[in-house]
Figure (cartoon, rainbow, N blue to C red):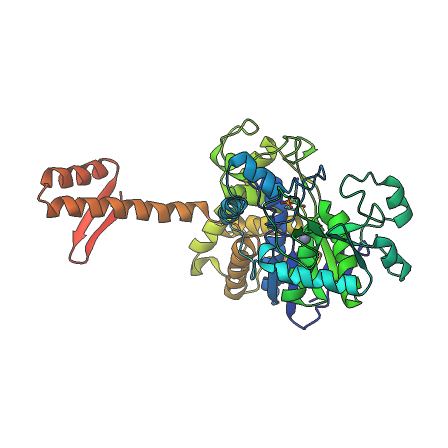
Length: 490
Ligand code: AMP
Ligand code: ZN
């Protein structure tokens, strides 16, 4: 089994060889928790959730670190006072850490709705200030960084002078970068416009601040990922992921910081997920072209004709490869709903087929070839749309088995059944809406049964009879026995 991963560092697919056999260390840049995540953010996190699930399915033990950025991410206008958290805390009249808490909770709730697995470690920037101060000191001591007016900057020219290559990840050359930079942030403090902040001096109004050897301040955004990935995954680790838009400058700076600190590249495989667009335009809060995940799920929006279950959204996202742009539209969602339903119909038949459908002779469908192809899709840079195409082929076969047109041996059938389960639920992370609804019905019925029991205890037989009779009218019969009350649908 050979897994190939597209490595953005070299712009090609490469055979994946983890540092430690059968183990993978993966770091993904997490959200900046100063506002609700939009659906575009969810796509990137879902892409890496699928990759995490696939790696586990392929037999790797994965340490998956995804951070929470809760300090240090400046607004685009470069105003030092406009730390995103500080700005939002003024707007909402809350403490910055209340902002952090509020949107971290929102982030977790949203991802749970879309059935994303939690990472194995979820560190926060504010929990790693010491590590960031230590790294900054190390970079100053080795001459890669300088102090200026209480802030500390990474010296990009010095980095290049030592034969290191700033711009290698994003394929930019430093002269071009210098020529094209319009610098707003710290322009009087930096030696060069491309130098980036490792530590920022806090202005008197800046409330998120920590003590440091250079005075009170806060860490730079790029440094937190270097500090946390090094701490939990080591100086060099296997996979680093994030949205395409983070390649420059964020990831470029991470490469520079890692190399300057440890003398070696921090990451073996850089993976970048492509953007979600809506009506052909990139989804982004700043342009207003965005939808919140729950607005799509509740139908509370002007873009889609109806509400869509989170698993339909997930199926829609999985139908595009993680490196392709995905445009979300009403038509795409409606088509996804149909496709999902067809797949689930096949899954239901798979459960219900019995011995009489199997043959004692050879299968007349090439199961082994199908299995090889389905695995190959996953092994070819996690190609979810090709995998889904194979699942549809299997669905067609399952319908044909039911109609008696295809026969499988018992062994092929049980392996198909178990693989379909793995691919649909474990790898793609889809949910069975019908089964989930049944669970909810069970829970709702238990509430009614408990209420009826309470009424009986209180000798309010009018009410207890009313509950039973009304349910009976709806075709739900309550059955009392010594073990308690159960219900059957008539
Ligand atoms: P942020 O909280 O802004 O740091 O963004 C969190 C993640 O969402 C980053 O990895 C971004 O690259 C990603 N992201 C932002 N906009 C989009 C989009 N329209 N489509 C997909 N991913 C996005
Ligand atoms: Zn990062």
